[in-house]
Image 1 (cartoon, rainbow, N blue to C red):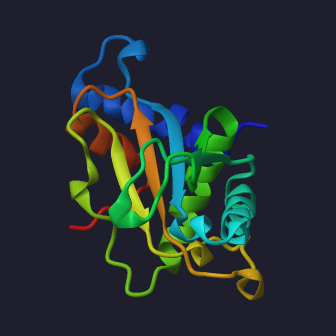
Image 2: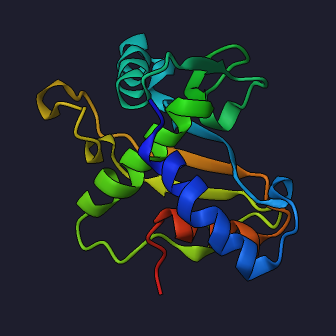
Length: 180
């Protein structure tokens, strides 16, 4: 089964981008390479139940088992020692990536209270886009009663675009609701 957003990319987005930027080959077209979802869990240094809860919530949202990240260096100001668990992340590719992007754009983002669109300043200069969410309850898969603590997440869209304007055109054609 082909994901709905991938089908839209192939049938609608690619011809529009080809006419907009004048690509001669389909290999020049910008596309999504991967989506990285990251949750920082600062409370894990006191109690691992926070890390386990974040890992299970991220697995529920993405459909893939997250990887636990540990601190590389000791930082006395943050009371973190080398090797302590500090975050969990998932790298989505292929079918899971397209399905997650579709659920994010069509279900999760419209559930934000007083939503005006996502910021345009999240581009990094190389065609990638970063987006921060304040809570995991935007996704309908998460049950409110089982949430221990509200936790935000960082979502990075890695594209094959060479410039920010190409990545902006790609994401906006896919349906990303950018602010005006």
